[in-house]
Length: 196
Image (cartoon, rainbow, N blue to C red):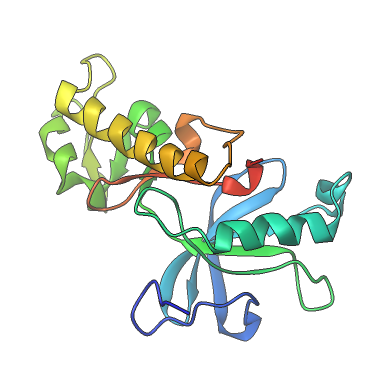
């Protein structure tokens, strides 16, 4: 099996003893997405918080979706490192590569993570926002994003969707919160579990 990150074990089952979960990054109908460490690698961990979240969806169907996402490898699609759908082993969990911000963060948050400022977001610095620890000023919400930035973001989304469509899949939840960016400002489609 090809390792996504050097030295990081990538496999189907989550080794919960090697997974540390820290702070919450977001919450949805399924549960929470938290920052974490898996074998000392920064990851995003999506865990079911409510058993009712699987109503209408069997664990077998979830396993099929997670396994499908697990095998997807493309620069513009978030990678799944491992997952668990066996309640006997632990909570229903999806461990993914951790990305730095969403398009929603870029468009609406008063600040974006400093990791993004080094790429094309450096041109978006604004003196109208104060800088907090680990943060850089971002687009002020009144000035349109530069055309080159908009095109770069859209191209990443289009490449990820073309990859999925080429495999007969349709992403059912495209929205700014599900379009993530890494430190190189590469846009990635995430939460592929909504694909058909």
